[in-house]
Length: 236
Image (cartoon, rainbow, N blue to C red; front, side, top):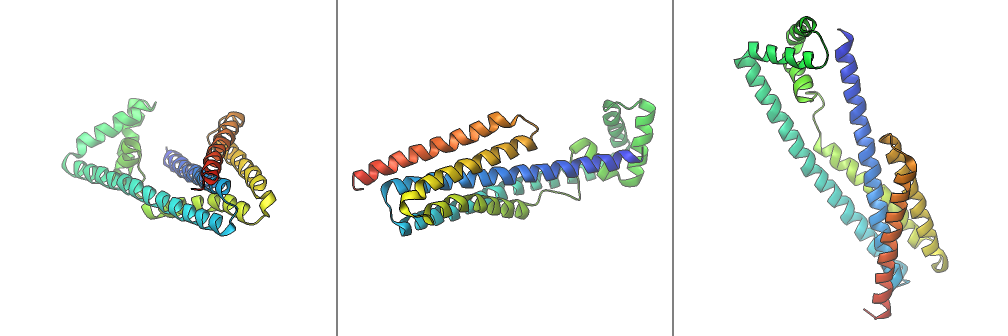
């Protein structure tokens, strides 16, 4: 019985780390695709390095700030919900402790413990820290590891920026004759890598994830390049 809380906490911590890694990979992937589509589209209309740099930087800043703001709002809402749930649980434990003990016993029994063992475990967990026990077993929340909106916003900003830097540098650093080829190849390689890594984190088959990622990125660049070329030819 003494190992169960430790194993559960370890599993929750591991799950949280995997979620952060998955979010970072997806954020970097978004940075690669959106910025690549933008700069390739502009490259279809102009060869000006200054214009490409300006467009790429604008896309990087707008995308990273948008990702950070969206993540901050989303995680803040999640944190508020967690705090409200903990406050309600704290009040219920204070006002009806016996009913809460019975509830915890039932939840543990539903996880496969015998009624006697579930009752004993519920009593021991309640004596040790009733709120923590109910938070983890009933709500799936670790009171010491509530979602942090600032961490989420910072991670999203950083991941998107790292991903966006690849197509931005690939389009402005090489000579004009090679910049499009280098950008497309580097972006597709990066998308294959993020597709493989996201599949690995999700314990899924890597091949389909890589094909979807690469195919989506290639389509995005083809569409924006065609649009930029048409606009450039029309003198817009």
